[in-house]
Length: 141
Image (cartoon, one colour):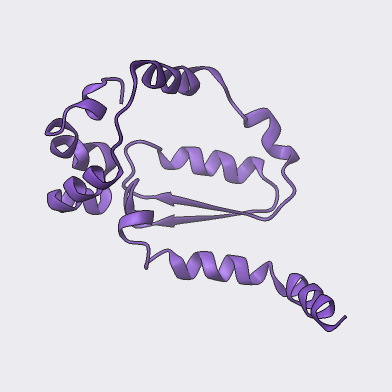
């Protein structure tokens, strides 16, 4: 991530995608190539440097205990970019959080969306009964 070649070199990024993102992209190089080709946009030097600066200088950790909303935290068991320990820290600091470790890497929420979808639907479904009642009352007015 610290080299602009990840963003600029058309052959470089797909070549290291498996190592960088893990999960299904590690096993299926064509998937990595397809996904990176579809999502890669030209990055300016200024934008690249701002991105690096953002990762180096700001942390929301002190504010996480203030989060009161139910929060679903999903983390891959093969994610080289964001280690599981990050998800576990979030889970400890956000009082009403639910942590789920899924089998996959950094991009598997996109490439294998069908696998975590039931988890997300169940989480959102558990949070919506009062919202459904409110919606029904409003519709009846």
